[in-house]
Structure formats: C-alpha cells, structure tokens
Length: 420
Image (cartoon, rainbow, N blue to C red; front, top):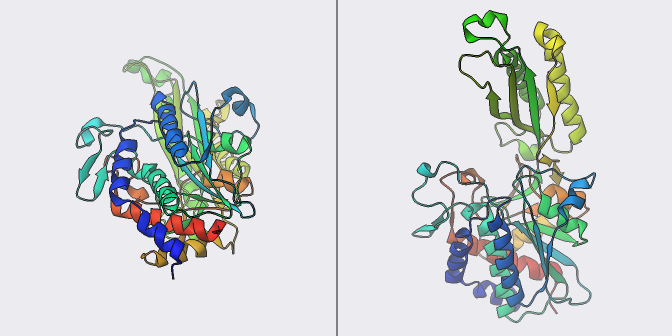
C-alpha cells in the first residue's frame, strides 16, 4: 500500500515532461570522450541546481586518476572529464541513497543503418528512437523525474539522495572512479541501466586484451619464403574458442539464462600493409569475460596460459611468442551482498506503484556496479529499456516504461531514506 506521501510522488511524475526531457538528452551527441559529453554534464548540472540540490561539478584531474594503481582503464582519447554530483538537503539522521547513471554513449556506427540522424530523436507513438535513448539517457530521465516528483509533492526527506552523473562508463568507468575518489559515498546505490523489467544484482566483468602475432615478410609471389602472421594467428583463435567453452562451464545461478555468460570475443584484427606482401604482424583486440567473484588477475593468468600453450606447441610461435597486453577497459565482476534488503524494497515499490513483481538476475556485461560495490556501497541496477537494443541502430525506449521506473524510484527513495 502507498502512503499519502508515496501516492503524491507517484501521481506527480510528469509523463509529458519525461518524453520532452528524454528527447532533449538524446539530442546531445555525448559520445564517450567527446566535447558533447562535457556539454551534457553542464546541462544536467543546471537541472540539478533548479531542483534545489547542492551541486558539485568539477573538472577531473585526468593525470592523477590515470596514475592511480586502481585506475579501471580507458579506451577513448580525451582531454577533459567532468564529474557531477548533486545532493538533496541533509535531513539529519537518515541514510543516503545514490541514484547513478552515465551520460556517455557509444558512437552510432554505420549511419546508413539508422532511420534518420541517430542524434535527432524519432518518436513513434510511445517509443523514442535514437542513440542513447535506452543506454542510458532513459535512466537519467527516470532519476530526474523521480526527484522532480518528490520536490513537487513537498516531501521532506529524513536522509539524503545523492545523484551521481558520470562520464566514461562505456570505456572503463573513469567517471565513477573519479567520483568515488573525490569522496562521494552513500549507504546504497541504484544504477538506472536498462534492465528490461528485472533487477540486476550482479555483473560479470570484462577485460580488454591485445595480441601481437609476428610473422615474416616476403613478396606475395614467393610466400613460401615468409610466414604469414594471419596463418600464425589461426591456431590461437581456435584455442581461444575452446578456452571460452571451458570458462563457461557451471555458471553462477544468476547467470544461467545467458547462452554465453562470460564471452570471449575478438573484436578487431589488423594485419598487412600491402596486398602482394606476406604480412609480418597481426594485432588482435577483444574482450575476456570475467566470472562472478573471479579475481581479474586469475582471468588474465588463464588467458595468458592458454596463449603460452599454443605458442609452445607451434614451431613458429615457439621461437616468436605472441605478446599479450591488457589495454583499455578493465571491468572486474561485482555483486550486491546476498540478503541485502534493497531488492525487496524496489520490488515492493514497483508493485505498489502498479507494476509486476520483479525477478532478479545477473548481467553478462561489465558496468559501474563493480566500482561502487568495490567501494563497499551495496549496488544494483534497475532502469528502463532493454539492453538487447543498446549499442545498435535499433536503440529505443518506451516513455511509459521510463515513467514506471521513475515512479518506482520515487517510492524507493521515500522508503529508503525516510520521510520527516
């Protein structure tokens, strides 16, 4: 049952305002590392100020963060990064709930695959299409709409809400890392990533790897005088496929719905600089899935051991071993502590606000969850949209779903931090 204050905030979520705000945010092409990423942080800072929050907007010291031994890695080039945190008025004796979301989006890819400009939101009925609509500007909007409804209802909170809007989630978690390093903390955290009507209480990890495979150059007409780096790579690719199979035996119960919970994939291959030359170098880059609870160092060791075994068995690679490095994003796994009350609070809020009961599951991708969990902050993901359309030209989200999540988050805030 909803209390009078809860009923007021549920009724106060502005459906039309949610749609307008979502279109406004999608229109900002905040690709990871771009100037528009910073532009969106400035825009959101203004929104938080208008909501009456105490706002901390700061330019992150990139050199200091990169020099930190626990820096989570990054893939996008950038000259600047802005942190943004807003806090509601301190009620005095209640806990602090963090509402977190990332402002950056991945590049749109092949523009020909889109129906129009990916950064000009296209509205069809209840659905908004565009890059970032699902991942995760819908989540940002749901969080803002929840706070607007609480403010409009005049509810005074016993504790506090901390809003963490971060950059660089898509390439490693720079923004969340910098925000936590600045000292912003809370008693629990909800990340409004798209969860498709579920509660995500655990994330697998993902480590970016690079393989450099050497060959021996020669003219293509006398290729027998050389060694193709492409041919030298092939037994390694087959071995990595077998390693993926081995690492996906007996997955954690939260991960059993995924065909490949801990995927190992090669995303790029670069080799050769002339069509009639035998290539003397191949560089492969990809991602290695990290199992729930697995130390990333152990995952790296298993991968490097596999590569070493292939080299030891191959006549060419034995004398020209493959070089393995770990650039880019380095996502450990993360999990909400078992038995933590936050999932039941959100389930109850969602049901009382008119939604179905939410089931719990893990996610096969990495996110900022592991950084907050690693900092000792119990964290889960709950937000509008389906991750299956994220990062694709089909990216979209239902405004009704954004509204439903906003209502659930508003009730969750009241039940978590308390009402005066």
